[in-house]
Image (cartoon, rainbow, N blue to C red):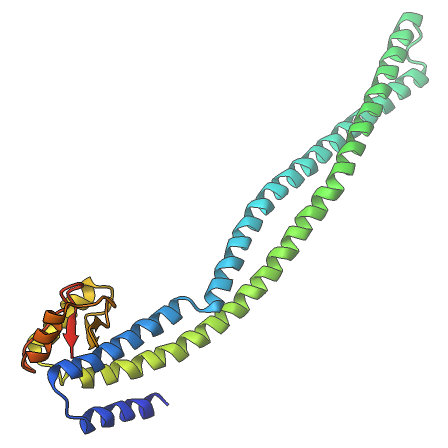
Length: 254
């Protein structure tokens, strides 16, 4: 398709013997077409959607980091509770065994050990309460992390699909751009060197439009009216003379 369109452009250029200014209008048309294609390429729907998905992924990543840190802190706290509870259970068992062994007979010592045993039991109860509180907080924290991971995976699947769609669309537009570039090269060869250089300079400075047609008494570039005397002067100029709009400075072709 691209080669076919390029051949059409070339045959059209060869078939039409036009003067420099009118060849310049054809060149401007090719350049405008190229600008439009590049704009389309930069604003493909898939690109916009991919940017939105990527932004949402970054937000989810930040939320995931925070949620994971909170979950990990609870897991660490639970491990501490389990360790403290294990130590407390061991000390309780040791105290109980000592008291039952009969090795300690003094009433004062037994009372002290009984008080310590009661204190250790209260300590165990406090640890169990703390562990239960941590476990209750841990369940929703783990669920939140899992939800964020699922959402991120879904977005990543969308992103993969959009990247493939975007790549396919870019390839198609790049082929069109290459075809129009070839046509532009053929058209540019018909424009005299000095006129082409002026056009390129103006096009760079004036937002991509360096040449326009005079339509009635209006400039096709800035769409402003020219004075009657200026219009008359333009129509009386020779075909090799460069005429510019008195309003915007673009090359004007009658």
